[in-house]
Amino acid sequence: MIRWLSILFIALQLLQPAPPTLASPAAPAVDFVNSEPDANFGVDVSFHVNITSSQALEKVFLYIKPQGQDAAFYPMTFTPQGEAVYRLELARQPLRAFSKIDYYYRVSLASGEDVVSKTFNFEYKDKRFDWKELENQNFKVYWYNREIDFGQTALNIAQTGLESAAKLVPASLTAPIRIYIYASTTDLQSTRLGAQPWVAGHASPDLHLVMVSISSGPSQRLELERQLPHEITHILQYDAYGEQAKDLPIWLLEGTASVAELYPNADYASVLQSAVQQNQLMSIESLCAEFPRDASSAFLAYAQSQSFVRFLYRKYGATHLQSLYEQYHNGLGCKQGVESVYGVALPELEYRWRLEELGVNPAALIAQNLLPYWILLFIVLGAASLTILLSTRRKYSAHA
Image 1: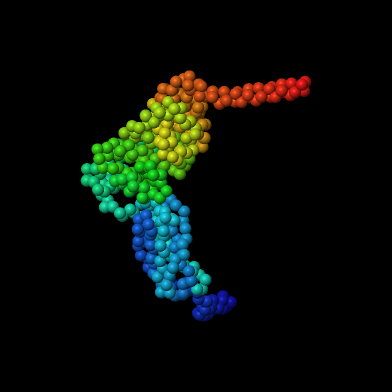
Image 2: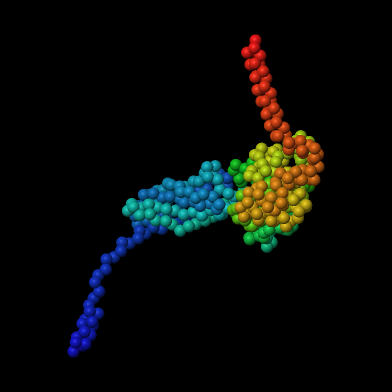
């Protein structure tokens, strides 16, 4: 009997209507109709979005995250109808050419709630020129104002340059490289605000992007053979070590890139000879962290780095050079890495380079190395002589 009463009770409970539930407040209805940003290359980028909302808009913000650059929020102007615009001035917030820009919109409603749009993106392209293109599995080459045979030549040289660089840097490409060839240094410089005016090429390793300036004329092939392998080497260095590549000694990074060039800079030999004759060579240690900013000193730094790395490569082989990269990657300092791989201190290795590669007179090197000690000795002896002279004068005055 009790069993049947229990079953009846449960059945009655199941037949009763469920208690009403409190409805959760509806999320505010906000719709974003985005327009493709209007980019005036090198000048500005205009963003435009139409926002429809069930509540009044209090504030509208644009969030921008350029590839490889810091993110930023900007307040947008908007109408009561929800049309919001913002003009990004590139003189104040430069964007890297051919990089991807992620962005979204954030609105604050009258209720105090914030709503965020989905993330949009666009590529900041240089649309000032009518680009032609060719590609293979490793490269995409873009150029303008020249015929297709120029593009094929560039593509061939890029492939050979990659093979040259791979002999020096222990890495392989992780993605194809885009190469943009500008017809003048002025055109190239206009893509990168703040670049040194003497820079003729540039690599953005994280974008797998190379930009060079090659003027038309009989020397254009030689310039391709010099610039393309150089910048491709920097991409390989990044593929090997990522962001840590920039912490490696500058003389090693730039020296390796210069050695990889299929047509070395013919002016390096003369500038090195002049520096030797005028005793103006910089120490390799001074080129560990940075190069000089002025054009003439920077050129000498490139020449020295190329000559020094070439000396290491020829005398000790590619295996030692690649080991040097690994030691620096493992955290050794500029001097410690050299000593670990080559078994001698950096000044000693530099001494051998100056002697064997540059033909510097050994006596002159010895005199140069001893110069600081001679100066110190002169100061000590001079101070001692002055002390003796003053003491003698005081004794003479006392007896007078």
